[in-house]
Length: 185
Image (tube, rainbow, N blue to C red; front, top):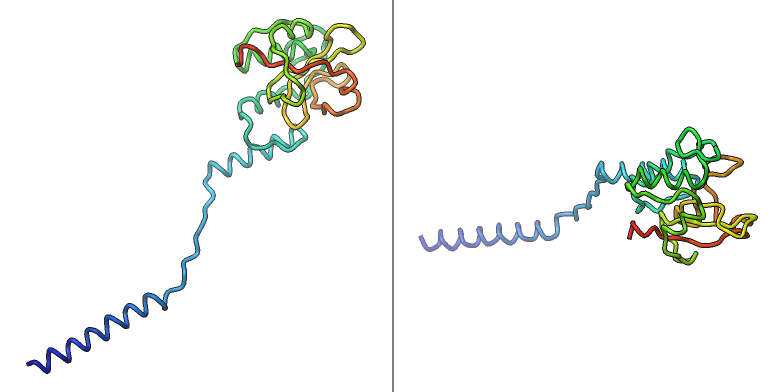
């Protein structure tokens, strides 16, 4: 019986050691499988779509509601005194956009919109800040909404609601100030 126990013990030890060796050296590392969630794909598609719509690359961190609502205004014709998507001027666009987007009541004219804001240096502008210009006037006569990456949206008297660059010669020449809407702080 002793011989049987010794043989069994040797056999069991041999199997155990073989099993451990097989586990340690016989398995290949498993590759990590990454999956893209539907949510991140949808987010990526959203920012690709609106980057194309607005004409510049969005960072992917912008407020989706802001981007969707601001984009709806693109192509709106310029109408002096207008304040709807059927036709608008620069201050009518800004005033109506913020009423719809954040339910904020702002002054009607570009010159008076300055009063709704705290002054912001050009280098410190954030998405949603207002951009003021003095064009052929001693007072503010044009306004737009900053979109980030040197871009802003505004109602141009020649082209309607468009996206332009702050570094464009024309806008650099007439830039007056940036403004952060006090009610958004």
